[in-house]
Amino acid sequence: MKKDKIIIAIDGFSSTGKSTIAKQLATALNYVYVDTGAMYRAVTLFAMQNRLVGKDFLNEEALVSSLNQIDLRFVFNPTLKYAEIYLNGVNVEKEIRSIALSQLVSKIAAISEVRKKLVEQQQKMGKERGIVMDGRDIGTVVFPDAELKLFLTADPEKRAIRRYKELLDKGHDVNYPEVLENVQQRDLIDSTREDSPLTKADDAVEIDNSDMGLQDQFERIYDLANRRIKALSS
Ligand code: DC
Image (cartoon, rainbow, N blue to C red; front, side, top):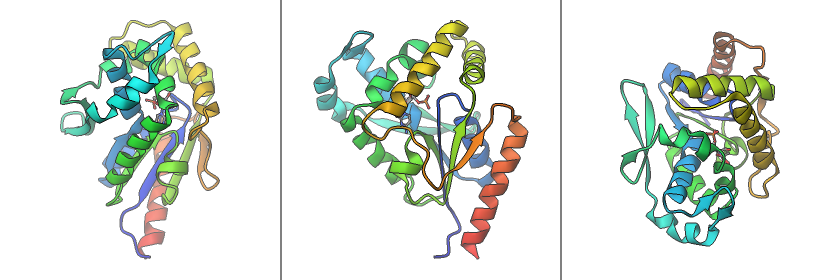
């Protein structure tokens, strides 16, 4: 079938730079970028605001029955050139990146009913294709038919340093050991959970960017995407 626009699925461990490459690709190809991690984070924020989750507790039943009260939307910010996430009409982009929330999000992302609701929304967003979506299960569950699948990896220490610097730049009060511990803990929970664990799709291209510069990575992946688009449109 002739296709002008494709779906690009980007999965991988936390802090491997998925959103950076996804934004670069979306801008270069004039595609829509969707950060599915932001969706799981926004549901976690809702659960925190309603005291349904904390360090030592999770009221799964109450959260599942409140899912219909959660409205998630992406609104394009022309200054930043990407869409920001709104939870029930409020822009929560900054709040959802806090370390306190990052320590709880994997618990929320392991709930099947949460995943079901978010996966349905994600599949709708990709109906017209022309989308770059990043997450943990995009190439395996959300779009198993994506025309280009990438799986990003990097050493945990390097990822934690990147995340630490990014959080400091954004004005969060963090220290390196807690960021490293969070990265390692999320890797473990995300890849061992029962529902849609983080795994590389058989047909995904694996990229270890531990020692790769951003520009090099972009050129390599942009070239891959263009080849795929060309092959499918001719
Ligand atoms: O990409 P991120 O760090 O913002 O993702 C936050 C958490 O959400 C991550 O620990 C795992 C979960 N997640 C998921 O389970 N499935 C996705 N498609 C995206 C994120």
